[in-house]
Image 1 (cartoon, protein in one colour):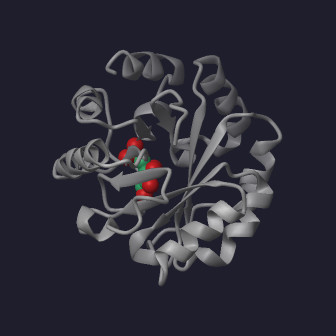
Image 2 (spheres, rainbow, N blue to C red):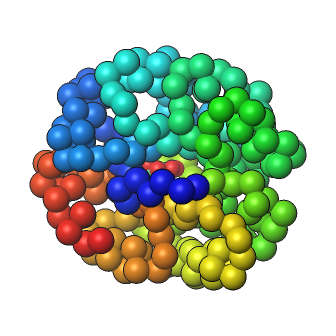
Length: 219
Ligand SMILES: O=C(CO)[C@@H](O)[C@H](O)COP(=O)(O)O
């Protein structure tokens, strides 16, 4: 993927849903261009978050790039629905698809960017045969399902492996990391070759503008 949007992708899972519109405008005032949107189905992960109606509503109030992370079994079933409600990029989990490549192809055909995510127990080697098609690889640095968990350090090794693969190949995917990012570890994460950094609690817990100012100062 050619364009490199600013690195920080706030995850609205940690937003105050009574004030979602206001908080999105606060992010815009901080020049955030990338919004991470977590969709959970209660099957692939234990929790249920929210779905298309929320994306459709917030699409009306912002032009931010919608980075939609599907923690959903067989996401191929929903590709067109997410395209219609305004997703710019769809991430599907390697572990959740019967045919990952066909799912990614369908996302592209629907006019969106595509991304594949790996959970902490899935090795980078599983992505062989997919790296030519993906725009982004999402490395989960917590077990998917909940915000506010502790960063799993082994995920940095995966990031380095992916960064080496793309340096040694013609692939130009971006690398995104998601889970447990905070002011203490953001600098180290960015230095390992990550392009997009998702942060939920570290952005929405407390003063959003102050949190973003501090996080952006780290990378
Ligand atoms: O996908 C997920 C969790 O499954 C993440 O996007 C979290 O929402 C990130 O939250 P923090 O770890 O930053 O609080």
